[in-house]
Amino acid sequence: MSTNKSNELPLVIGVDLGGTQIRTAVLHGPNMLSRGSSLTGKDPAPERIIPRIFAAVEEVLEQAGTTLNQIAGIGVATPGPMDYKTGVIFAPPNLPGWERVPLRGLFIEHFHIPVFVENDAHTAGLGEYMFGAGRGCSNMVYMTISTGIGGGVIIDGKIVEGASGMAGELGHMTIDWHGERCNCGNIGCLEAIASGTGIARKANEAIRSDEGIELLTFARTLLEHSGEEELHINAHTVALAAEAGVPLARVIIQNAAEAIGAGLVNIIHCFNPEMIILGGGVAQMGPMLMEPALHVVQERAMKAPRASVRIVQAQLGANAGLIGAGALIYYHNNIDVGEN
Ligand SMILES: [Zn+2]
Image (cartoon, rainbow, N blue to C red):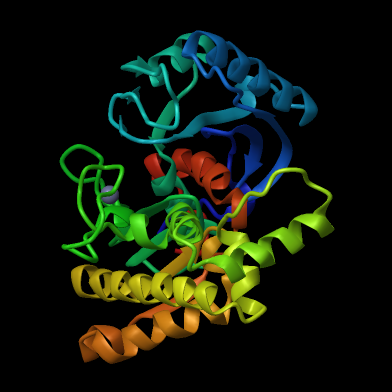
């Protein structure tokens, strides 16, 4: 038994490098002693962004009234594809211009303390595992459903990485093998059907083909009340329309919900997890989404693994990736955070 309990956890730094935001924090477990965020910007070239991240790290250190020699390490969450062992980033679609960037090496060169780099969905899963809904549960799957769909799988307390760190791409499991092509090249991916982007695309297609007149009228009314100038139909618009009873919107949400249900069945059958944790904005649509999804699970999943799984909402919200980035230091050093 380790004696290193949560009140003795070392301080760490988390960095969450996203396509829209860069967030940094000094963390004591899940608690943020200081935090900063800035927009990634339209030109995220590494030679521009990396010095900004270094400066942001210095800033949160100063805000927290601490110095690097009190920090056990820096954990960095980045979009994939990337190599978690070497910390090299391979041209993620969300970070144009990042071709084979040795991010971990650059961080170590600059700060001279331990650094770990990990896929952002994996770190979010790790955050929920150590400090969120997954505490005390060593076999769990985290799935985030927002503009895209990502996943982090923890089995026997270990992040499942796969041969090249790409395990857990839950958004790209095939749901409809005769379906539409996904950005990844595959056909009928869960992400193409049920992500925020997929839901918005379905709505916009319907509007162009005239069957979406009622949805369009609803969106125009929303626009008048919002004070914005441009009509922009996203997943949130579709959810509001569905709540207001617009039939097409209900069909689109129902379809996405059932696809998520089929995805959950696949996850249950592949991993037999104790818990599936759902995060991301789309997952927060509530009963409209969850009831049909759970109905599919009830109808289709094998009885034994269905009986042993709990499907719950994430607890760390948008901070999961950042808290999980810091948690990489505890994870790689086998530090007992107290609840697992
Ligand atoms: Zn795909």
